[in-house]
Length: 377
Ligand SMILES: *Cc1c(COP(=O)(O)O)cnc(C)c1O
Figure: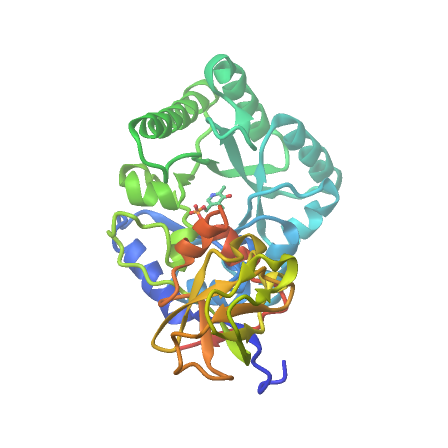
């Protein structure tokens, strides 16, 4: 990036990552391990810098979604344990072993496929078994009628040659959502998770060193489910603590600049589709940010941003590379002034509500075109 350009950028405060890590850690039993979820480029914050911080802070594990993400970390000097949460094709078994990467195994067929390949060249692969306790996504099915077959399949998978079972985990679907029914559901997922682990031990003699299930929602709402390791993502980046227990600090500030200011009379149609018409003489700012940068078009006419000493409403359709804001009431804002799209002064949650989505999606959506500027410490 040409430094003086500074069209739109994301400031990443690594000191706040440290703060969030330490405040989560402080609430955990001292024997509990910490896995930092850094998939999807660390929710848009930059996987390598975030992993470097977690590694230097003494976190125990990292999780990513795929081999490419794991390799990016290994190639940048991250030596700590890494778990791949998603699928890795069997032809990459050697790469996993050579780079000491832990692979999730989600069903017996995959375990058998991996094992066959591993025996072919005599390798040993560290694995974590994923149990499906109610998320109905990945993992060995073990709810209701599938309990016995689930336990049986996990035992068979763990006994296959070449596979070294280190951990077992499950994922909650509503641990972050309020209400009695959701609480019941989460507690049932946890009960089932523990019951399968017990049965795998009593029927098959298989034990796991690391049992983990707590995502951010569970770390906040069900501290008793921490087991041997917690697995938060969102909390680390400063969101998701509706209980206020952790005094988290947001780590990303999405910022742009006013590129142009124009004056329009009342009755002027603004942007594609003429979806906004000025109701008064208007001082309209043009921002160098659009949906190609990660500002959802769905937020058009429904959001505002921090500018100058206050906030300014966004007006008209958000374009690919540009959008407009009404600066009539913000005379202190000039061409070149910064506008905060989300961060300490502009709520990410308000923006994600306006886009009918969750904060996760907007953090991940900050696109490749947007340079990350790191505030180190
Ligand atoms: C993404 C993910 C997490 C982290 O979820 P948060 O809600 O961000 O804490 C944990 N576990 C698994 C399996 C995931 O896919």
